[in-house]
Length: 164
Image 1 (cartoon, rainbow, N blue to C red):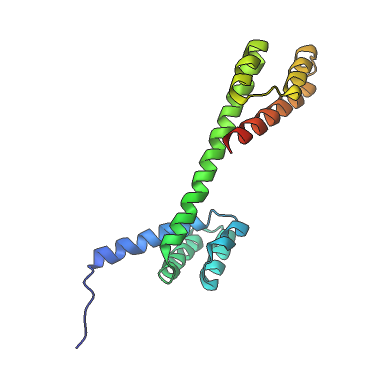
Image 2 (image 1 turned 30 degrees about the vertical axis):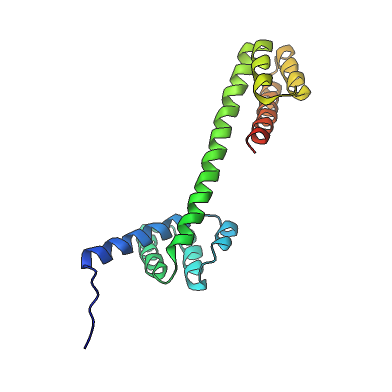
């Protein structure tokens, strides 16, 4: 006597699509980070191949294969790792956004903005003062751009250290 599955065809289809979406998300992960996902070899190779495919139809078929191979993989650890990666990425985007905001404040408000910045990050960063002073005293366009990038980098370092 054969026992039939209690899942409907629609439910099975929905689960397959969810696994395929999860597999497609893995296509966006760099290969060195992908290794930490501990995927079986066949799935790992299918994802590597999928990253190289440029033809729309071939990529669609490869995504279907990845979805099929995902059935042999526990999806929960993959979901957790993807969530953690996205969380880190979102955190980095926030820091970047705040860095841009603070650079504009410092460029527009000068010492007044610098006082506000030091209240946020704590001890004075002498390098930021030096770069701001250089920016005020120079008019060359290429040098100004270079100094603004340097200022951005210094602010980014401070804000990254602050969020750790």
